[in-house]
Length: 433
Ligand SMILES: NC(=O)c1ccc[n+]([C@@H]2O[C@H](COP(=O)([O-])OP(=O)(O)OC[C@H]3O[C@@H](n4cnc5c(N)ncnc54)[C@H](O)[C@@H]3O)[C@@H](O)[C@H]2O)c1
Ligand SMILES: N[C@H](CO)Cc1c[nH]c[nH+]1
Ligand SMILES: [Zn+2]
Image (cartoon, rainbow, N blue to C red; front, side, top):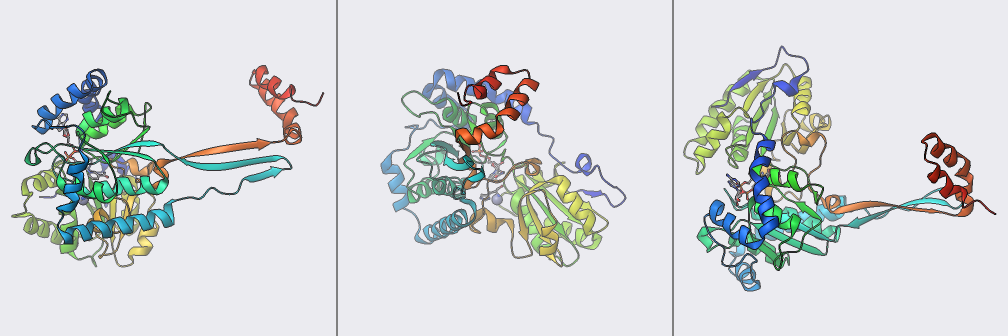
């Protein structure tokens, strides 16, 4: 099922050789462009039409009522509720302990010359929660908790309407919104939800300043399209997993993890990077065995047989690290003899899962880490969604006249060198008279 790519005799240029989906976000941008423009022009009417077209249901109300949110929380199975609450507790603990930067003391550069730094939360955000192929209640937690910890005061959530639930988003998504105290929830999915957040819809939803959250290729494309009008987090699109494993790895663990992420989307990518042909063969056999009879067998098989998935054979773990860095996976598992040491050498990954007992599924739900992570190689320049994603860093410059005068000659010369005398004059005018 998984094809094999032998890189043992290759040095460098891995990026061009590695398996990656043929999907083209720009092609999806062309698809969603008219949708976004239509929502901007026609508002709620367009939202309803696209819901009917793509989600096959017309929501009775585009904004979910308070009673529906309350009911979803009240109807929750107590054990599932406890799992949700534990996930919230852990994500909150990590967000508060590691991601929330207090404002540092200003840097004093000379007498009367200081530069400070303030971390200011974005005021209003739109958070997208996927609900096409699976209702990702966990994505509510991954979006909302860091926004709340950052101090965002206005939070709106959107998720596709579900025919099965009368045009509301999935009840578990509504229940988690209610548990987190989110009151503004929309039954809107895909590119139309991103357009609603970016442009606002008269009488329904005010525009936001920042849109975050994962989604399929159309959601990613719409986020790329509205970027600039609003801020976005990373392009967190169709899921990827790469596993670096040696002959000490358990093939059943590796196979289960490759399958777990292939389950998300026919476009999902599962890649095993190994220096052991014996392990590779065992994993391929295990994958065949475990996929058979899975609930989402067809989707998984499509993902695993697509050109985006493969077993990549490497000479040794040094090459494995270089290949993993070139691939820059959304999720990277290290299942090797000294997993922490190998993990410490990785530079490019959305999140790193160390050892046999840190599967991606743990991070998807309850580890305390984020599961909203950059895909398609974006992990070499972007970070997963965290408290800082919801903050702007603002420099605060506070110089006295004496502090400015110490630099006046240099600034005037600098400005003249750039042929900008007006800049020089704005300093000269402040010289003591
Ligand atoms: N990278 C991450 O952090 C991360 C996290 C979780 C999930 N994901 C990914 O999120 C995605 C979820 O996708 P999903 O489809 O289940 O749900 P989704 O909510 O992202 O997308 C569903 C919406 O897509 C739109 N759509 C469907 N077909 C369309 C078409 N032909 N043209 C225009 N719009 C169309 C519809 O409006 C629909 O409401 C998966 O790819 C999954 O792997 C990524
Ligand atoms: N693996 C997904 C991130 O790519 C997140 C998720 C949510 N639920 C299950 N999995
Ligand atoms: Zn997952």
